[in-house]
Length: 431
Image (cartoon, one colour):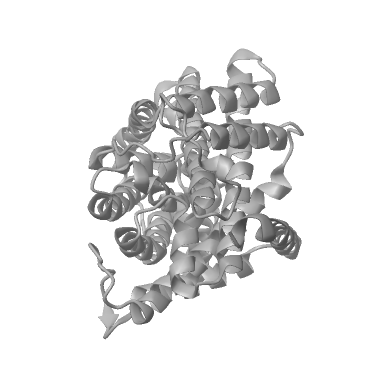
C-alpha cells in the first residue's frame, strides 16, 4: 500500500507567528466597526476598544496556556478531548469552527469583491471567487510562501492605519473630552460588546502550531504579542479617528476611514484606503483558508474525519486535499452573493468555541495538574485560573447579544454536526 506523508513542515518563527496573529486580528474589522462603535461610545471609543481587548485577553491567555501544553493543529478538538474525553463534544466544537471558517472566508472574500468592483468594475462574486482560488493556491504552495504574502499584506494594513494616526496628530484637539460618552457607561459597555468582534481571530494562531519552530514556546508568546500590538493600534487609531472627524460624524459615515483620508488629502485620497482594504480583506481570506484547512487536517489526524484529509503533498508538504475542499466549499458559500444572515454564524460559533476552550483550561488544571506547561495563565487561586473563568463568563454572556434567529440557525448547525458525527462514528471514530 502506498504511504502518504502526514507530517507538516515546522518552519515558522516567532515574527511570522506574530504577523499571522496581527494580520487576522486587524483584518477588516476596524474599518467596519469604528463608526458603529462611535455611535455608542462617543469620544470614549478608545476606552471601549481597551475593554474589548481586556475581555479578549481572558480567552487569549487560556489559548496561550493550552497551546503550550498541546501544540497541535485542530487545537480546539485536542483541548476539549484532553479535558473531557468526549469525542462527540470535541467533534461538535471543531464542526462549529469549520463552519465558521468556511462562511467567514466567503463573507470576507465578498467584501474584497465589493472593493475590487468599485475600482475595476469586475463583478463582486467573480472577484470573490478569484480571490479564494488565488489564496488557496498560495496556501497549497507552502507555509513559508503564505507567510511572506501575509507579512507584506499585514505591513500594508498597518501602514494604512498609521496614515490615520498621522492625520489624527495633524487634527489633534486638546479641547476634546476623550472620556465623553453620550450614552454614559452603558453606551461604552454596548460598544465594547460590538467591538469585541474586531478581536476575533487570535485563536487562529493555535491552529498552525505544527508548522511553528519550538511551538510550545513561540505559539503562546506570539499569541500574547499579537493581541498587545493589535490592541495598541486599535486604541491609537480610535483616538485619531475621533480627533479628525468627531464621534458623531464617524457614527453617520458609511466609510469612516475613507472620509478621514479624504478630509486630510482631498477626495481622490479615498482610493488609497480602498486599495489598503483590498490587502486587508485579501490577507484575512488567506489566513482563514490556511487555518481552516489545518483544522480539517488536524481533525483527520485525530481520526474524527476521513484520513484522506490529512494527506500532504509530496513536494509542498501541505494538506492539499483539505485545501482544495475548503476552497470548494468557500466558493459555493460565496456564490449567492448576499449571505449577511449566515455571516452571523461565524461570530456566535466562535463565542461557543471560546467558552469551551476556557472551560477546558479550568478542567485541565485539576484533571492534569502535572502536565508540562511552557506558559501559565496568570492570576490563580491555587490551581484555579481566575482569568479563564472570566473568559468563560464573558463569552457566554456574549451569546445573548445575538438575535434569536441567529441562535436558532446555530442550533441547526449543531444538530447537523451531531448527524455527521453519528454517520462517521462507526467507520472512523471507533477504529
